[in-house]
Structures are given as C-alpha cells and as structure tokens.
Amino acid sequence: MAGHDCIITILGDGRVIVKQFEKATKSNPYRRLNYVQETEETTPIEKAIVREIVRNKHCDDRIGDRQRARDLYPREIERFCNLVDCNFSVGHLYLTLTYERQYVALSEAGTQFENWIKRMRDKYESQFRYIAVRSFQERGTLHFHMLADLPRIPRIQLLDGTFRDIWGHGNVHARKIYKLPMGYNQGRLKRYLIKNLREFKRDDRSFNKRLYLTSNNIVNPLVIRCRAEEFEELKLSAVGEVTALSKGDYRTKFLGKVAVTPYKISSDFHNALLDHFNF
Image (cartoon, rainbow, N blue to C red):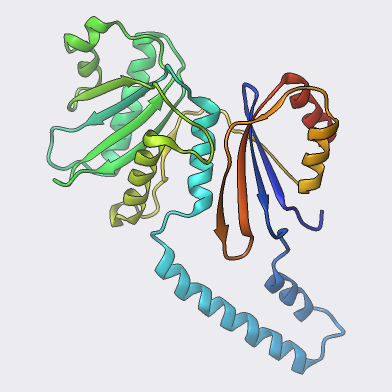
C-alpha cells in the first residue's frame, strides 16, 4: 500500500475507534535519499550532495530529539488509551499503592510490585490483567496508579487491613470504576493517568525505563490501516449496526486535521471488517 489515511482500532465487545487523516501518510523521503546514494547511476557529485543533505537532516534531528526527549508523544498516549479501552471497563478496580518510606529506588519498587502481583494472584486465585503507572510524589518517593480486572474483594478485607497487608509497604486505596469513556473523550480518570505518565517521563529517574507496566496477559487491540473510502463503503454496504458514539478532531503538522470517531458495531459488521481486510 502506497499510503493510508484511515486507522481502524478494534477494541473488542463491539467497539472500534476510527481515525481519518486529512493527508495520507507517505514514505520517508530521507530513506529514499539514502537509497539513491547507493545506486550505480549516481555520479560522485550527486552522492556528495545527498550525503550532505542527509547529514544535516540527522544533525537537526539530534538537536530536536534532545529538546523533545522528555515529551509524551501523541502515539504513546494513543497506545496507552487503546490498551485501557481494550482491557478495562466499568466495574473494574482503580488502585493506588503508596510507600511509607521517604525514598524507594525504581528498581526496588519494581521488584516489590511484581512480588505483590504474585501474592495477589495467590490470594484471590485470579490471573487478573493490569496496567500500572508510576508517579513521584512531592516528597520524592514513588507510588503506583493501577487499573485491574480483579475479582470482587470482600469489603471486610478492605476495612480490617488484610488488603493493605498484602502490599506491606504503605497504604492501598481501591475504588470501583464507574465511568471510563473510550477514545477521543478520555474522561477524568484517563486524563489523570496521562498526566502522571507525562510527569514520569519528564523525570530524570525514569530514563531508559518503561513508560508503564502491564501484565503478560494484557490484550492488544487489532489495528487496521486502510483508505478512508474503504471504511465508508463498508459502512454503506455491510449488514449490521454501525453507530457513532461521539466525534472529535485535532490537527498535526504532517497529517493535517485528524478526525476521531468511536463506534459501536454489531458482530455482523465486525466480521465484515475482518473478512474485507483478510484478518
């Protein structure tokens, strides 16, 4: 495919998010320059010109990379939101794990978090899924924000300290998720988690660390790249329900206006999507 101007993200349970770009994506022109440089037909002068263009481009990239290294990229936010939408819903738990100690290294906290996951799975006999965001408090120590599809926890265990003792390093706050809108309309909880992701990435202590933590059984959404007219034709011709839940848009430098629309679709339309794109 020469390019695409539409991305369909299938989240499951009859939910998809469709992004349509004003401008179709294109291949990297600098990659083509590198290819031209190696062809036998190119003269030495042409090769030298191409090398200089590529060298200057890489220098500009390195300067820009240093300036943008700590920014949270839109694709990182989108990837995180898609994982949340694909794995968690109303009724699941939002947990916060804190430390009583003044300072805990990231590596130590990571080990303690993994051990807590093992104890939780043994205690509640569940291979639950989770996604966890690390955050630094003002006093410098670490805490975790986490979404999990844990089974129902008896209220008495939340009140008598049993649940807190399984963690063993500080307080544990658990709340049921009552609202978790998908896609463009991120909602208060997602915005708060993204804010913590952004602060974590900007902190020097997070250098070369994973942006967030996930269980091994986390479900990845199915992503289809296509032309926008293909999806529109499918909507008109396919049997089954296709209902837009909301609409939003934003602009990017290279793709222009990006329209984002979450849909609720029937199983018939879901199957038509998979068949049309050979999945």
